[in-house]
Structure formats: C-alpha cells, structure tokens
Image (cartoon, rainbow over all chains, first blue to last red; front, side, top):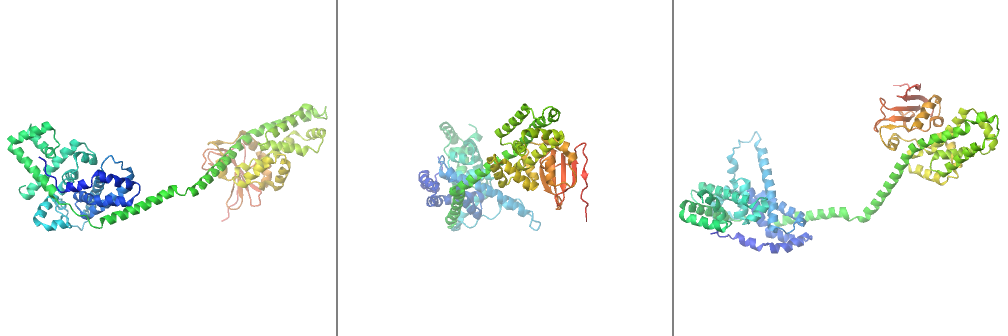
Length: 210
Length: 370
C-alpha cells in the first residue's frame, strides 16, 4: 500500500533522463543554450533541495547558482552512468552541506560578541521560518501544517534531513539516494526510518495528533 | 516477527522495498496487531504531511544569474585554453630558443670541465721538456750537436701536439718551437747548455703559463665573445704563433678575469681540491712572488687566478684556490687558498696565503682610513 505519489513526480517524469541526455551531450560540446534548458528544467528542484536542507531562502539561491556553475565546469566529467538529476543533486547536496557549515561557524562567531544578548540553544530552533514563499500566504491552515513540518525537518540532524528530503520530498529511489550520499541501501533504509520516526514524534508534539 | 522488527520494517514497507516474504509476514501481522497497524497509519500520515509541503518557487531572476555566471566561466575557460594551446606560433620559437640556450649552456659547462684536465696534462709536457733540456749540459761537452734521439723526442712531442690541437698547452709547445726556429739546431743545443737548467725550465714554465693564461683561462669566461674567440683560435691552429704574439702584446688584461661564480660553476664536485700540478706550481713558485709585481708577471709565475674580485672599491684581488669545502663561499677556517691584492695601478701590495703551511704572507694589508 504505497502512499500516493504527489504532483511532484509528474515534474520529475518530464525532466527524465532521456530528455536530459541529449542536452547534456550538447552542453559538453559547449552549447550554452542547451545548458540553459537544463538550468530552466532543474533549477526549481535543486532550489527546493537546497532550501529544505539549509532552511534559508537567500543561501539556497546562492547554493543553486554555485551548483549549476560547478555542474557546467565539470560537465565533461559527467559520463551518463547516473541520471543527470542525480548527479546535479549530489552537487547541490555537497554545496548545501558546506553552506550549512559556513552558517554554523558564522553564527558561532556572532555569538562570541560580548554586546549580544545571551545565546540560548533553543534560539536556533525557534528562528523564524522563511517568510518569502508566496504559496504559503494563500492558505493559512495549510501554512500552519507546512510550517510545522518544515520546522520538524529543520530540527533534524543534517544526515537525517538529507534522506527525508531526498526520499519523501524529491522522490528519489533508495538506490539513487545511496549513490548520492555514498552509502549502502541498508543504511539509507535505517536512516530513513529514524528520520521519519523523528518527524512523526515531532509532528505529534506540535499538532497534538497526526 | 517481533513488534519492534515489524515497526522498523514499516518504513520500507510503505516504500515497497521489502521482499515478498517479508511483505506477507508484515501484512499478516498487521491484521492481528492493532498497535503496529496504528504505527503504520501514523507513519503514512507523517510521510503524507512531508510530501504535502509545497515546493517553493525560486526567484525569477535565478536563471539569468546562473547563466551569467556560467557564461563568465565559459569565457575564462576559453582564455585558459587559449593561453595553453592557442599561441603555438609564439610558443614554438620560444621553445626553439630554449633548446638553443640549453645547448649553449651545455657547451659552456663542457668547456668548464676541461680546465682540470688541462692542468692534469700540463706536467707531462713539462717533464718531457725537462728531459730534453736538463741532460744537455752534461752531454754537451763531448758533443756540440744534440743527439739524434733528443731531436727525435722533440720532434715527436711536436707531432703529438699537432695531433691533439685541442689542448692549448701543446700549442704553447708549438710556439716555443717557432720562437727557436731562427737559431740553427746546433746552436739550440748550445743555448740550452750555456743557460742553467733551472732558468730554462722557468722559461718554459712561464711560456706555458702565459699561453695558459690566455687560452686556458678563457673557459672560465662565459662571455660569448670569448667563446667565439676560442673557436676562431681553434680553426686557425696553423696561425697559432701569430695569435700568441698578439695576445702577448695585450698582456694580462687580454683575458676576462673569472668571477667567483664562474669559478664555483667550473667545479664538478665539492669538497674541491686543486689539481696537484697547479698546487705544486703555486707552492713551489710562491717564493718568486714579490710586492710590486703586475698581473702579467704574476701570471707568468703561478698562472692565472681561479677568480678575481674587487677589493673595497680601491683595487682588486686574485684568488688561487687549493682546496674548498663547500660551494657557497671561501671559508678561511678550512679552505686553502692564496689571495693576491692589487692596488688600482695593478701592482701587488699584499700576498696572503691561507691555511697553507710553510709559506708566509708578503706585504701589508691596506691601512684603514676613517
């Protein structure tokens, strides 16, 4: 009894490997127009991956830009063993991780200022969720749930956040995720189980009941 | 199956990644176990909630910004590519020049290796000549005409020198023969008789040394002009006499004084030890050096210096190195050498041996004026 796939999988089908292959080949020969098509096709997904991992709109924007530039630089090394999406997501993942580290150290530096108010552990969790999503303004009720889900995902450790974002938000297969995170399928499964359980507990606490 | 194991498997069960056997087992368990079936429902709802989170629209300008960066990257890539491969028309001549430079350097290094060999060759010539002239006084009383074998020896040595024209000291021998030509063979024997043995030897040595001063020192000098001159002199072997005379007129200034670096570069390995002939010559002839001599006279006695340098802006000094431990500098504690200081007019005023036993310094160091 699988959970029904959301509308997202439709997008994924459109940007399938078959369509990408030809564009990648042209890009490898230096065709910038072909690469632009790839950018248009994948930017939203990569942006969402980055945003869910970093939870910061501006940082996610920068990470996506860097990811595509890096992809362009290394497009010749892409052999087509994996899907282009998987490859691109791996780049975005790595850049997001780096960005997270930077943010962490940035916050660390700020907290050392003597003039600042005391920095308590919880403050990181209670930071305002990003407010720029236009769709979130539409339905307040949905926004409430979505905001809570976002908070719960944000509260996860990065390694659990990664698997749940990739699997449940981006619909990547266990195999793909294993490839991206460089881990065996068994590890992906157990990590995903823990991540889902943690989100479940978090939502239960936030909403009273599921 | 245990409840715990079942609950662990539920996540995979939802994703359809359990095996067929596990699936049957889980489903049959769920029918009987309410807790586990509730857990499944909760997990499903959680996943649904996560999936229900809307995708966020990236800013509209992001495509443009990405492509601007990519274009900049592409441009940069191109320039790097061009820098590496494009200007082949420029790079090839540069490479050719580099190869030529290396060849010339190699030739120069080869030239620098030779002086040691030349020093090593020198004694044989000197001894051969000694054999020719030294016994003469004794034998002369009975026979005014030099013995045939003596002449043969001289001739053979002349021939040998012609066969090996590269070594300048042989040329020097040649020259000596030329100088003595005007005198008939009989007189030559007499001349050798009347002159004491040592001066004869001295004459030879000085001739050899002067020649060496001009020819053998040249390799020290890296100037292309010097090398060219050498090449020319090699070609004009037959005209060697004329050449020698020209050089003699020019005196000691005719050769470029080698620098310390020239000298160090000419040494193949450290610690350096001067060839025994050079060493012997300097030790033996040191007593002949006097204050007030000019450079030409010094060369005539102990040969040309290993290197020369200016001294406190008011003169220069010549160095004859007998031993040197390390290439960086001359170490007064360990190295053996002889310094000869010249005043601006080119006369020696101070001769200082260092670490050389049984010889004393001559002259005085300059008096410092504040």
